Length: 98
Image 1 (cartoon, rainbow, N blue to C red):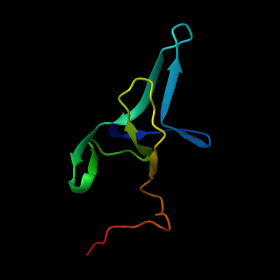
Image 2 (image 1 turned 180 degrees about the vertical axis):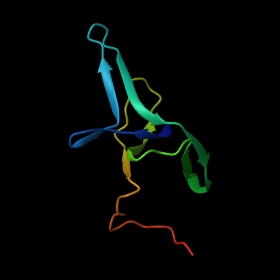
Image 3 (image 1 turned 180 degrees about the horizontal axis):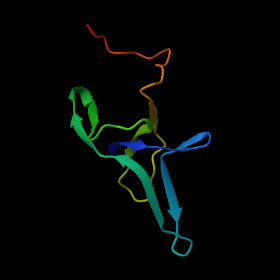
């Protein structure tokens, strides 16, 4: 399993992270998603760090596992919004700066 940063498409009251298109005649599926190119660094304790290769534009994103099996999708999605003008959540934990 590989973890990835994926950009969402906002559609009315929901965010779509992947679309699956089926061909009626063959039953084959094609997946399209907005995977952001990243580098992955393994950290001690089983942690890892995903770093986008380019700056993320404001918008809706998620960190999600990309499974290697064809036509298999994960139900795990850790979503976040990148809005430089937005307020922090009331329960946000920020890094200490001195």
